Amino acid sequence: MSIFDTDPNIGLSTREIPLKKKLFGDNQLQQAKGISVISILISQFKDFMILVLLGAGFISAFLGETADAVAIAAIVIINGIMGFVQEYRTEKSLQALQKLAAPAAKVLRDGKVMTIPARDVVPGDIVVLESGDRVPADGSMLMAENLTLDESL
Image (cartoon, rainbow, N blue to C red):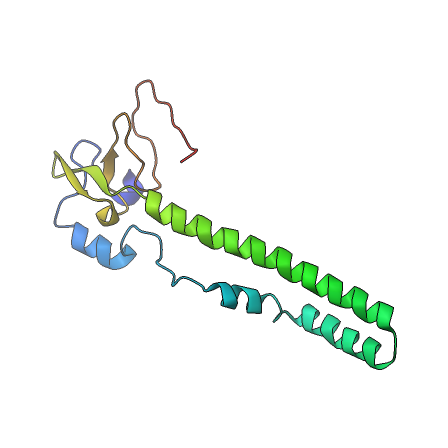
C-alpha cells in the first residue's frame, strides 16, 4: 500500500480524505444525460462514410441506376438499424450498471471500520468486504479467507 501511503492496520486518516476527494473526485460512474431514441437514430446517419454512400445513392438514382440506388439505400438502412440497436443496448446497459453500484462501503479509517456512502471511497482506502457485499470500487486484495466472487452482477 506504499503507493497510496496507507497503513494496512490503520487505513487512511480522516484528515487525508478531503484532499483525496478533491484530487480524485467521487467514486461513481459519470451520470451521462440519457440520450433520446431520436438522437441515437439520427447519429447513425452522421458518419462520413454513410454520407458518402447516401451521396452515391442519390447520384445513382439521378443517373437512372435504380438497382444501385436501392442497394445503397438498403445498405445504409441496415447499417443504421444495426448501429441504433447496438448503441441503444449500450445506453440501457450503462443505466443498469449505475443501478447496480454498491450504495455503501465498509472502510478502515483511523484504525476503525466505518460504513460510508460508496461514492466517498477514495484511492488508498482499505475496503472491508463480507459475504454478500458488492465491491464498491476497483482495488487490490490485501487479505482473504475462502474468497469466491460472482462477477455476473
